[in-house]
Image (spheres, rainbow, N blue to C red):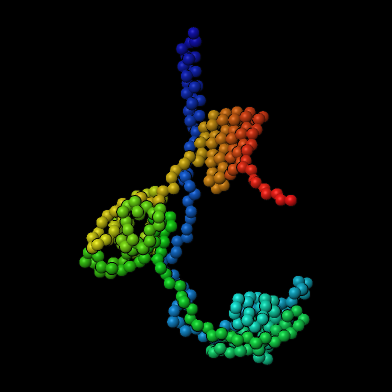
Length: 325
């Protein structure tokens, strides 16, 4: 029989080893699937040329820059301007002008800077034919360019704002009268994607979201910002919804990517790590730095098993190659 104090010391050492082992233990979690990221838009957007805005000038259908010499050893500015872009089926394209051509003059006026062509296009108000003197390599030709008057193009029209992640739905800002309160700004649901959590909560297109967790959303973008900045995926939020003249409080569970174990560390007994991007995982059992009793590594479709650092088995998905004589 061992002395009592020896047994006590042995128990204490075992307890100490267990504590140290537990201190080394670590379990980490990550999302079950990769969570996409989005860039939130500003509240106000500015689109190019609104409708009915009068535009002045004509369009030659080309872009130019300064005509620099081709020699890197002796760069200098040569006469004319170099064509750096030609709009397909535009005026210059129809006249036969190509990328890289040098425009020396227009109707006899020298064009040694791109601003000359830009100013000529701005001050011409009607469809007009111009005679371009063009150099292509060492050949100088004349091209007749029928400039086309600029017209106000159709401006982009905002349809709605969309939240493709947290609520997976589209919203439009509206001002309406709710419960004897006039000019209330809110977000109307205009589209619900098939996998949207709004469906599970009983929300429908046409419902108007007034607030989230008691805070007014003010606009469609305001609602999207609150769901993606002030809440976490998988959270339960309370929508204040206006429908058929009444206000209801509806709980919505935002989209949840799920949870998975991404890392387990119980050295030296067990080590496990996994990643979704790139898709990989590794496992080692009884890892003693120099070698481990068993290790497993996966990278995409390739898998490798190693036992005692001596035996290695690797597998991968083969590729079929069609060989023809």
